[in-house]
Length: 244
Image 1 (cartoon, rainbow, N blue to C red):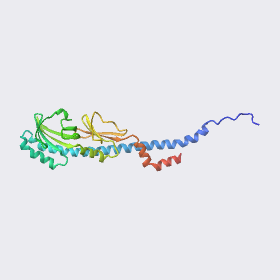
Image 2 (cartoon, one colour):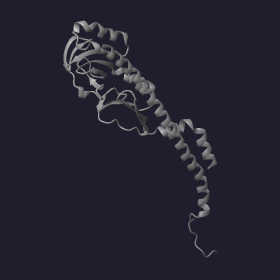
Image 3 (cartoon, rainbow, N blue to C red):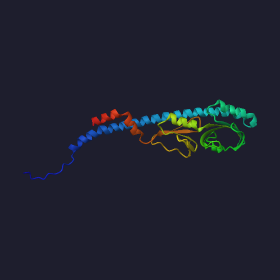
Image 4 (cartoon, one colour):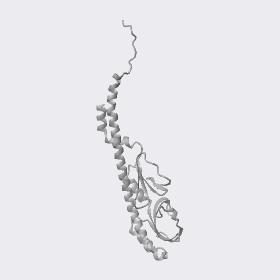
């Protein structure tokens, strides 16, 4: 008859060692895979952000060319310039409206002809670009406005915000993308906000245009890394579990 009482088994290095050995390859493998996924997401985010910038640059090239073409007409009577203003709208798919101003007063519009509206230079970032949350014609609907000036006279062209939304939604359908002009920014919801766009939860990237005063913010929502891990690396993840 044994004289020692039976005691519950205790964890020892001998019992813990197999578990440690099994966890090491899994932990190391997951760390390497997570690092690789972060690199892939950042590279993808940067590429998408550059594509959006290139597309918006192309849109602004059209607006700038139209504005510079009309600039010599600034100061002439609206009746004499109105045909040229409407011609630029007809010929250019991106130009929604064209306008002329003098002495900080917008006096001629392709939509209404003779007009009277104050032009505030401070509204424009770098004196050229303004992201609006709407105007009297389409309140609450975003517009991107380009301004070209020569002294106290100049030309203003606008593009509908739907063209910007197309770039944000189609070029990066799985990413969070915002375009920022000065203190205003717009995301895929089509609403113009004031301030700084929120940083993306993963692969946050901010790139600016080298030709026009705007920037694009890109990245992914939280949980994207886990989603990529499960969808792109199931075989490797299973192999790590088997090795463990």
